[in-house]
Image 1 (cartoon, rainbow, N blue to C red):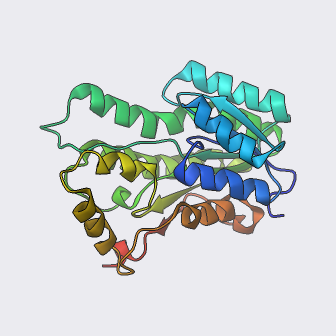
Image 2 (image 1 turned 90 degrees about the vertical axis):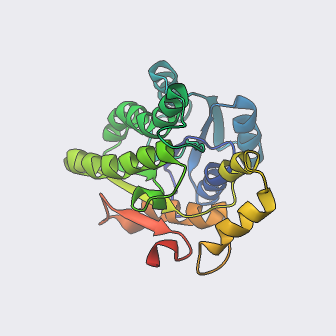
Image 3 (image 1 turned 120 degrees about the vertical axis):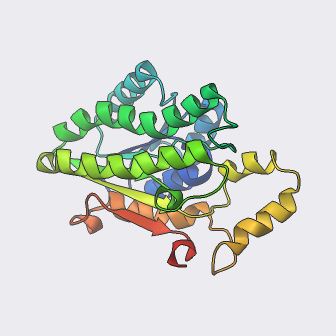
Amino acid sequence: MRLENKIALITGAGAGIGEATAHLFAQQGAKVVVADRNFDNAARVAAAIGENAFAVAADVAKAEDVKAMVQASVEHFGGLDILVNNAGFGCLGTVTTLEEDLWDSVIDVNLKGVFLCSKYAIPELIKRGGGSIVNLASTISVVGIPDRAAYVAAKGGVAALTRAMALDHANEGIRVNSVAPGVINSSYYDKIFQQVEDPVAFKKGLEARSPLNKMGEPIDIANMILFLASDESSFSTGAMFTIDGGYTAR
């Protein structure tokens, strides 16, 4: 029970990596706030977990939603020990083909969302004597990829913000780390598959990026998030942990 008596808030927990993390945290003794912009998805995950889960709807790009989400979490479970900033989405496009509103949406959810959730959750973590924040970055935080300009920019910002937060809040007992997933078989790619001409060929190309010749699964990332959320990583802060099947080793 690596998270016994801990209270965790996970954004984007209605599917994919967030859903896998919510289930894993609960199995390890945590009380879990399942947050998602789609309340039906959040409620489905919370119901599957049981009494130690609480569903809440929130758009992490909106300050009022985030404040209400944190307040509801604290009121329901009595505090917060862990924040997992997982909510995010990507899109195709270069700086010349992207519309400004889509650029803004990607930056707002992926990067501004980390800022807002951390801004309002950190005071609650301090009340409990500190805690752990895990941000979802990406391998494209450190390597480029064609036709994903907004997503690359946003995730690069998440990696840099993680380092800044780690330094700013270490003296408050708060550790801040990030996880950089490679190609993960999740709802993020489901949306991209719908945008490409040949989804089968596109998926094979994604698998070929990894020396292991496969896509990762959400639980692969959830296991690392669990490690960073637990006391087992007590000497780690400001770091990014890459789980990508060897993609960035090339």
